[in-house]
Length: 345
Image (cartoon, rainbow, N blue to C red; front, top):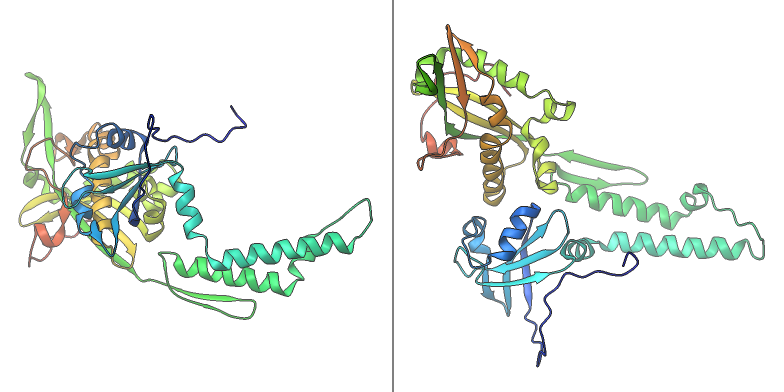
C-alpha cells in the first residue's frame, strides 16, 4: 500500500449519477485533527466557527460560497455552506484539500520559473551531447537570464503577498519592501484569585481588586513563565498559533494583568502587522481562551504568587456562563486606562 495513492472519500453504493455543484471557497481554515473529526462525525451539530463566517456563505453568482476546513494533520478538508445556520447545512468531504489549495495558490510567476528551469535543464543536457558524465552546476542556472528574472518575479510575488509586507518593488537584481506598522489590539477577561486555607481542602476566591497595586509584580511573574524557548520569549503565546498565515501576520501575543476602574483584569496584548480582520480576531480569541483554560494559563495558575503576605493562585479562565474574552472597545467603551501594565509589551 505504501506505493499507492490513498484517497479518503465517500463511496456511494450503486450510484445512479453524480451532479457536482460549483463551490467557491471564501476562507480556508486549518483546524486540529480532533476538531476536524468532530465536524466530520457530527456535521449537524453546532459548529462554533460557523457564526463568525456566516456572512461569507450562501448561494449567489451561480455558486455555493462557503468555508473550507482543512485538517492540519491529514490535509483532508470539509467544505461547508451553512446558509446562516450554526451547523453544516450543506457540506462535502474533500480529500487532499490542502494540496488542492496549494495548487490553486501556485502563481503564474512560479509557473514561469518552472518552465524556464525545465528549458534550461533540457538545454544543458543536450549541450553536453553524448558525454557519459553529465555535470550541471548552480552557476549554469543562475547565468541564465530568464531564470534570474523568473526568480526575482516569483520572490517579489511571495514577498508582496506576505501579511507583514505593505509595499513591494522589484528591481534589477534586487527587491525592496516596506513592512506594515505594528498595530496593538487588546483582549480582556475576568480574573479569578484564589487562596488555600488549612481549614478547607478547597481554595476560596478573593476579590482581584484587592491586589490591583501588585500589577507590576504579577506581570513580572507572567513574563518569567514565558521562557520555554527563544520563540516564546520573543513572540509570547503567538508561538502556539495554529494558523501558519495568522502566525505570520501577528508578531506577538502576551498575557498580562491591568487595573481598570478600580478592578484587575486579565489582558492579552496582540501586536500585528496592520489591523486584524474580524475573522482573524475571532480565531485568535478562540485560541487564547484555549491557552487560558488548558495551555499556558493552566500552568500559571498552578504556581501561586506571594502578594502582600497572601499566597494567591491566579486564573485567566473560569467555567461560568458570564466568562468573556473581548476587545477593549467592548469591555471598556469610552474609558481611559487607570494604570499601566507594568512594562508588558
